[in-house]
Amino acid sequence: MLRQLGTRQNHLNSHLRGRVRQVAKEAEPREAIDFSAAGVFRAYHAGRQMEALFKLGQVREEEVAHAWTQLLQHPASIDFDELRDRHVVFVAKGSPDQLAAVLDLSHLGRPCVHVGVGGARDFTRFGRLCVAVMDGRGSTGFNSETIRGTVILTDPAGIFGEVLRTEETTAHLASRMIWLIDGNAGPEPGKPEAATELVALDAPGRRYEDAMGTAWGRRLDHRNPGPDLITSSFHSDQARWIAFLKEQDAALPGIMGTARNLVATLVFGLTKMITAGSLPKDLKWSIAQVEALARSLIHRMANARSAMLHSLESARRYELAAQILYKLGAGPLDVRGLTRKFNRLPAGLCREVLLDLEASGKVARSGEFWQARQDGTAAVTNAQHLTLEV
Image (tube, rainbow, N blue to C red; front, side):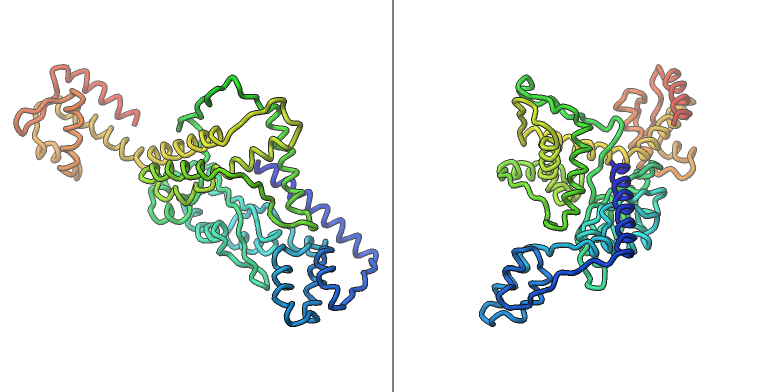
């Protein structure tokens, strides 16, 4: 996806450079502007909003409010010169300063930003700017136009777990995004009900390509630069989705705000892919099936977050348990005697690990003393092996 976005941006830049060179060679005649007051609405409906804006000064006083209302109801048509100056849809930069500078060129103020992180420090460096872009709190340009866009963050170095355990960076950026997790985070989407009645969408890769191209063409349509909307009534589905997110909030703090529009986003994307080619015969799909996919994404996020937050602690306790088993193999010890054999091992943590070992049947307690069970020799051998693995 990112490659396709970057390729299209490069193609657009090349076309714009060619057009600029052409304009420099030949002067184009410009249409004379009629500044009569009666033409303000005619100009507006003809798509020449800037012309209509000039004529507002000529409108009768009682019509001024209505004229402004009509003018502000839709975005202005964009001429080619403006598109040349503000043409960036997809942007990827290596530093916050470079990214902030390029946001001035955002087409319609809606950039798609790609941030690739190579270390934990990048989350802090990019955090404030990226959150402002996502929230629509960024402003740029001479007229302080608002920037509200999409942020895609990739982690090729695999340091997200380290960052997630840092409270400052987590709250700033990572918790504001939907995570697409590779590997065995699970669960995978389940089979929808009545699967025999479903019709597969043919050639999803080609449909995605076509939908991507259509989306870019629609974005750059200077005659109709407003947002592309799909109207669908699924109030009950949305209410059910919000209830699901409330249940997940303990495992994923803040997920209600982050994923509130996830089902609607997936429905929008699926609709565009379906209409990108010929419709399969008897195609059937429902919002419930899309919601099942969304639920699986949230569950994978929760599982991944739990693994990232607790993997180091689990590994530490696992290794500590192996070492305690090894030391108890030489004879019974109480908690105080065990902690003396370690470098600054808290007594509370030692007792917790002993209780875990007792529950698993590896140690037995007699009063205040703990000892390896009769099969402790095997347990000690396994413990030494596990320590090496950790």
